[in-house]
Length: 181
Image (tube, rainbow, N blue to C red):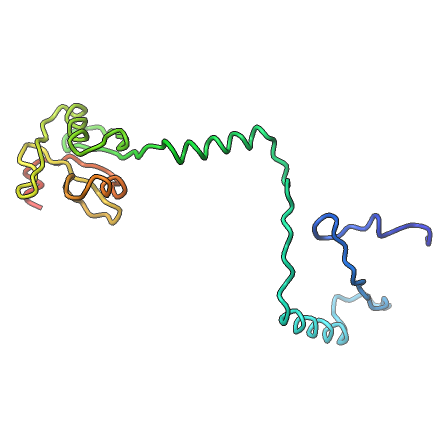
């Protein structure tokens, strides 16, 4: 039994290639097998906790290349990241009072409120009209949008860039409902 090298085949928890320089001292085995610690073990664990609280824990080394990922998967992830950063659209649902269907619109396609209104008119075959700050929309329909806070506002109330970041969905309401609320 003395000829077998147990350290070479011993299983350890930790990073590969690291070894513990401090040998563990184990108490001699007792005749009765219990899961309780002896008082000497408890004293040593308490002193170890006090010593470890004084010094910061050692920095963990990052294992590079684990888990193994094939190179084509890495390339696919990089392509997806660049696509999401560059060209992802801002899609919002558009509903119209009286229409039995919803549409989704990419707001990045449009560069101003005028283009958006023209696109909505062509999509829903209705007349929306132009927005004025004093009177709002004086037509049969008025586009409103829900912002991040859940408030419904008229399309055109805020600058275009702010509209793009805060719009969650668009609703084309009847003009009479807009003036009542």
